[in-house]
Image (cartoon, rainbow, N blue to C red; front, top):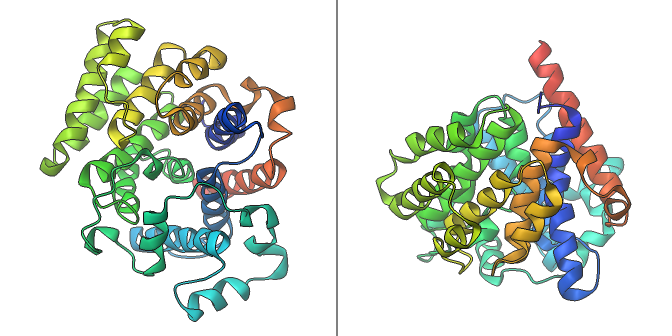
Length: 324
C-alpha cells in the first residue's frame, strides 16, 4: 500500500528534496525553499495542535492559517497582533516552532502573500481584490493531503478553502483542491487516469474555475493519448500559474512515476522549475516512498531530521485515529 510511513515521508520530504536540489542548481546552496519552510510548519501544527480537538473543517482551516501566521512571524519578526504572538510564544518550550532557528532566514518570499498575512484575516479573497494565481499556493499543502488521504473528495474541498487563505483567484483555489486530491489519490494507490477523472468531476461544480478545469481536462486527454514530451510541454502555459504548473508536475510524475531521477530532470526543464519540481517530488515520494530518493543528499538538507520526526508523529496519530 502507498499509505505506509515511507510514502508519507516521501510525500512531504520528496518535495522538499526536489526543491532543494533545484535551489542548489540555481544558487549553489542545498537549502530549504521558503515554501518548504511553510510545509514544515504546517506539518508541525497538524501534528501538535490538533490532537484532542474536534477536527471540524473550520478548525482545520484555522489551524493551517495559524501555521501560515507563524511562518509570517519567522520571515518578518512581527505578528498581525499581540494575541497571536502570545499564543505561539506560550507554547511549551520543547514544542516551540520558534526553536527552528534556520527558519528565520529570509528567502525570496512573495511580498504580496506576506502583505495578506499581515492583515491577520482568514480569507484573502475578501482582501483588496487580491487576484493571486501563482504556483506557490500549492507547494506547502502536502500535509493536508496526508491527513485526508482516505477522503480525496474532502481533501479537494479543504484544498480550495486553504488556497483561499493567500490566493484570491478562484482558479488557484481550485488548483489547490485538485493538487491535494491527486496527492491523496496516490497514497490510495489510485492510477493517474482514474484520479484525473475523479477530480475533474469535482472541479465541474466550480463554474468560476473554468481555466483550471480546462487545464486538467487537457492533461487527462494528453495522458490518455500518450502525447510526446514536447507536445505535452507545449500544451501548457509556463508562466507559473497554479493550474499549469500543477499539470506539468503531474505529467512529469505520471510518465516517469517509477523513475524519480528522470521525472525530476523533466521538471527542471520547465520555466517554473523550483515549484514544479517540488510538486513533482511530492507525487513521486507518495508513490515510491522516501527511500526512492538519494539518502545522502536528503541528509544534507537543513532541518530534515526535525521534519522526519514531525511526519512520523503525524503518521502515527492518523494510524491511531483509524484504529479507533
